Length: 260
Image 1 (cartoon, helix red, strand yellow):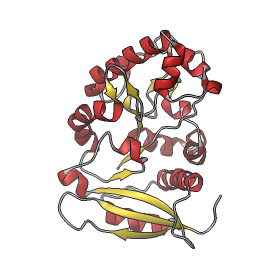
Image 2: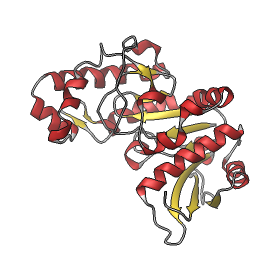
Image 3: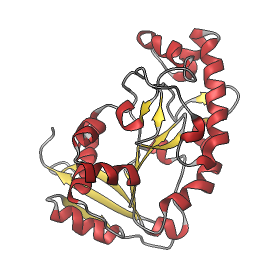
């Protein structure tokens, strides 16, 4: 099982660990694309601060994020699972998993990123600010920048099993499973059951709890159909729509009655 996650806008501080070692990151086929984004981002943020804020879509109150980006090559690095914070990651709570569940997380979780493309939760990265929606002056839109290298690397990373896609739209644009990979991919929406509407906060929190539940239970569904069964066994109310034609994935709606 490969679980595709969005990152979080908010991130923990880099800390005092050893700095980034790009060659140590998972998915080495993304190395050149990562270096291109890293180099331009550092240069952009080392120049005109106001321009950098505008490009990155940062408010005046987030001005310090620009300075942080100038130190990406030298700042301390921590496991990505510690860097990413926010609602989904609070609910997932990787740090409190038992040893077996942590090993499953290391194998199965892949976090998408405007800067890194995608990283494992065990990959050591510095804290940064660069969303997938950014359009850098030299490279252009990051979603488009990542499409070709992702298309080359991600099918192999997906292996032969289930792909559980929990990404938001901006990050899903960087890689769309195709062919036989799409057929074993399940995307998930979390809906407030009485209204059938998506509510952002508990959508993220429920996705974090779903991943935690699967990791804790040691569930290893081979495909979307088995995933539906596993989630129902874990107490989730799930409505599933199988693909209508070749090259499409499954769509799963998880219904939640309480917003929390």
